[in-house]
Image (tube, rainbow, N blue to C red; front, side, top):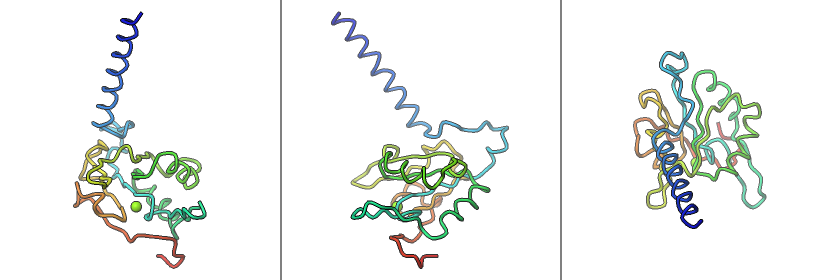
Length: 166
Ligand SMILES: [Mg+2]
């Protein structure tokens, strides 16, 4: 019995390791085939906090950056949209489910567990997306987050709730 339990546990850890390997290799599972027209699309990777929204911890409410919804709607016509946040998945999904209620704007969501943590920073390594880097762009309010692919990144202003932001 003990022996059987031991072998089951070994098998379980093998599966887990392989799954982690696949996730490390390519985070976005729905990679279009090369003959699919969407393969030619550019991928726009967007940060969440202080880029699209701001969460007020004291009141436990979030605010959406002015023109954020217009930006997302316009960009979704041109790009495959991926949200890549260093936030925890439960919190991020709470916000993203509100922003993209019918799931038509955002194709993929990546969270803290998909970042590479180095000295307290949460690096968003675009290589892990499995998309061609020459057709991938990231917008984030912290440039260190895209320090692995500086040439692919645009640093936007940090937004903390001002209604005058444009
Ligand atoms: Mg941010």
